[in-house]
Length: 107
Image (cartoon, rainbow, N blue to C red; front, top):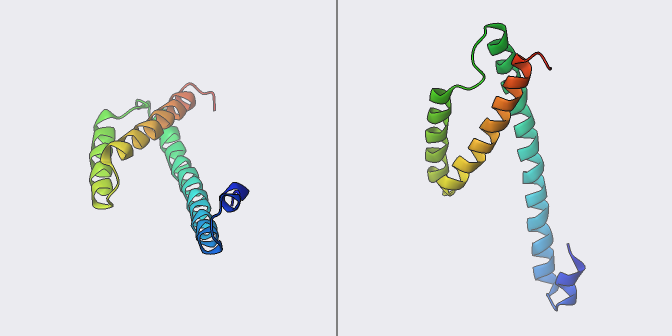
């Protein structure tokens, strides 16, 4: 917790609640990083499979269906679907970059 929260007259209950919530956020952030690492392990395997069989790094049909699927999941979870799509597009771009690197024999 930031000391400025207490210095600004925040009472002990609010300070404790902030600390609890921030601990939860930190745990969730760690889980997100670990889940992304697992996802990229799988997509690296896909990249190697594609490279072995001379398949293109990108699959626009799969990407479109994943975006539609993620938007629906986001709506169901009360998360902004546009945000979820931006996040997935960012991840897809990184996956394609990895696949291109693998296909070029640079990995």
